[in-house]
Length: 195
Image 1 (cartoon, rainbow, N blue to C red):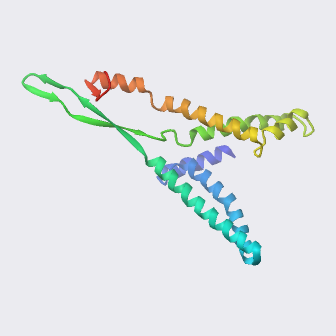
Image 2: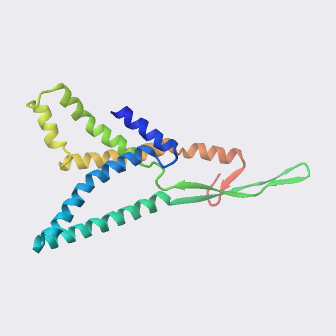
Image 3: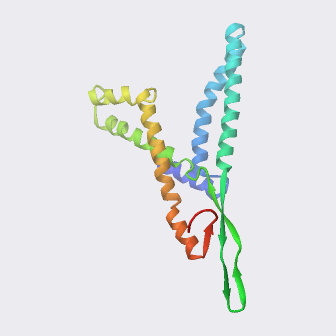
C-alpha cells in the first residue's frame, strides 16, 4: 500500500502539479474533514437550537480553515534575504567584483518532513505491538491508553518530536558553515558581521 502511494505521489510530482506526497496527505485530510462538514450541514437542516449550533459550528469551521490556509501560505512564502557584498579585486587592468547578491533563506525550509518523521516514530511502536502481541497484552493496552491519539502524553511527545526534527532537519537542509566557507572563498562578506 505504501509503495503504491509513494509511486502515485511521485507521478503527481512528475506532472508538476505540486509535491505529490503532500497532495495525497491533503486529500486524506479533506476526505476526513468532509464527513464532519456534511454532518454540520445536516444539523443545520434539523432547525431549532441544534440547527443554530450547527450553523455557528460550520461558520467557525470555515473561518478556521481560511485562517489556517492564509497562515500556511504566509509562512511558506516568507523568506529573509541576507545581503552579501563581494570585495573589489584588480585583475590585470580591470576592476572585478564589487557587486552584491542576496541569499534567500526560507522561514520554513523543512516543509512537512519534521511532521512525517515525528508521526512515524510515534506510530511505529504501536504497529509493532499490534502485530506481535495479543489485544489483552498489558504493554499494548498501556501504550494505547497513554500514547493513543487522544492522550495528552501523546500530544506532548508528538510536539517535542516535531520541534526536535524541525531543528535537526534544518541543520541538514542548511549548513551555515558550508555557506560561510563558500562566501569567504569567493571574497564575499555579510555587512555588519565579521568575516
